[in-house]
Image (tube, rainbow, N blue to C red; front, side, top):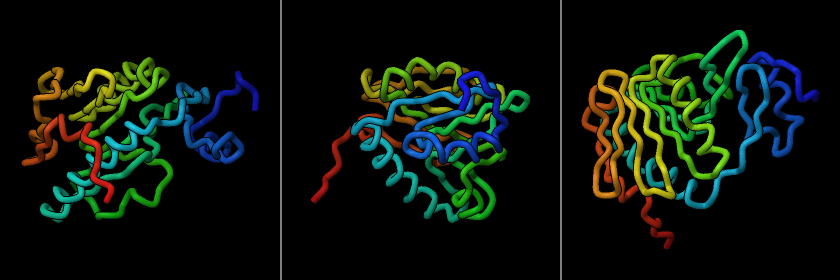
Length: 189
């Protein structure tokens, strides 16, 4: 693959299988394939912690779904495909997006984890893409700082520290989770 080749989202999806780790840690940014570092252990801990709380929340509501590392086509011509840690949908069937590698359906909330330096350095572009695309709620979890950067299209952004709580507002009604719980080491046994 040429470093200067411009890919569509569909071409990128087909080409990923030929990349290291089958392209699992890659994205498409304005038609260019971008390599990311694999997530670290803390990234996995955060995904585990948030997924447990989201699972309870979605089962209680009996509506909506969460997907993990689903490709989101946020721009076309040239195409940009992002793979946030979690995308949350309030409507549709429980498994509408789960078996897909990529979708153009806009989620109601996105969770990103800025766990490695390349992920941290590209996060502003990700957030700008999500805001431009119309995603109403974006949480960027920052492990080194132990805080969450929250972006709401209706009210702007704020930083929530370790003693705070993330809440879903209109995007995820009645959802709440302590920021401290995001970073808690899980009980494995």
